[in-house]
Image (tube, rainbow over all chains, first blue to last red; front, side, top):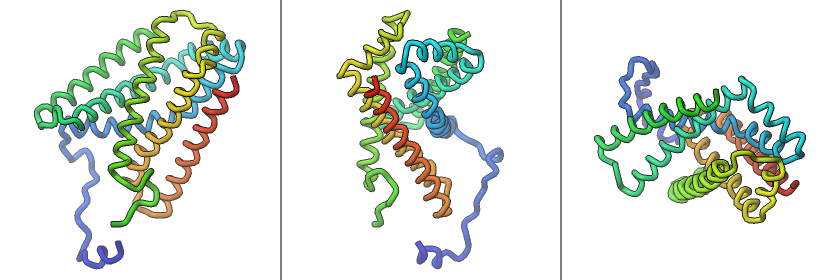
Length: 131
Length: 115
């Protein structure tokens, strides 16, 4: 790594002004997959806590049920669900491409749009169900 | 070639395999759970508790949390190594994430064997 640095005359240009870059839909699905993954990780301890409370006693089970039906909880449940569904669908897209299907650019674009639309539809359905 | 000291297995192919395998198992587990919710409209505490007291479900659930730990590590490792080029900061963040994930896994065992 140190030897590589000596060979470089000057650093390569970097453009981090994201709003000046045009992103194909496949790039959007990719970064959303990454973001949804991180978001799911942030929910992890909370998920375990809910799970723990639900199994401790009938009282804590009832208490958790109450907590989960509050408006604030519903909002976060909706966020979690949408993130999870998106991550799952994008992950399945990865798996399908891993076995060789849909790897062309046209197919990749189509499946990108498909998972975005599917997630939006499911997000609306879950939203309606929650409220 | 230098092997990464912080990736899960040090082999890209092996990490890739674990990522996919864990994803498939977790998906199947969640489908089973979803079917349970769909077929049991009103779940009491006792229904819920006996579900996880079942030895198969208990083992499958701990397996789920273990695979989730591995899957999450692989994903977060990729993200962190992409964005954090400062070695000290990167190692610190990776260490914190590893500890959090391990703690979560130990917690999941405690939850399931505390029934």
